[in-house]
Image (cartoon, rainbow, N blue to C red; front, side, top):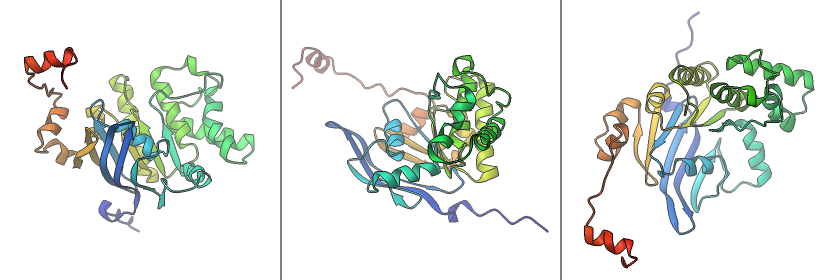
Length: 274
């Protein structure tokens, strides 16, 4: 018997859909009408320079920041309109691996991984321990259950954060800078783990990163943000060859230095610009 052919990406169901998302911090406009759809079983990488709106966008997707306007549908539910209890239930289908790992320093590695199970399930402790060990084995940390976070290396903390994020087998996984600050070998291991989660269990993964090599390795599609708007969206090859100068400046690490008018600069310094 032959294996069934994989479902083409463009006909898979949409599991995250953002429409016309606008977000302000005070009087400052951060996101300018962002729209994006993510399909089941794909890795979507969100890239952009500092101040581009990446973190704000991620916080909005997680329901941690209420947008000024627009809609965010996660697994068919608009999280900008659901009740707090509905959002809490929806989050059980979402895993989050934070940039710093966000492990509790007073808990062992195993206890950190079991925390979502303790908070959201009624499983007995033995079952939770087995599930935690299984996820630690997935991320290559089997045998380190008793260690405290202070005893872990940076790469181990990143992998532990992933283990905790997937311990409840979420349909969606959000990763904030999963390979930032890691050496090339450990960074490659994180990339391989994310691709394995996509390929073996069909997990949908949204990754925020500024690491170009990692993005080009793992992404099915890349969304490039700049000044709060999407300036490129497509496959790795499409983004690499995008005609926009702003996109190419980001990919090639070129600055966009403005030519300053000396008189205007002096007026700005002396507070006479207006």
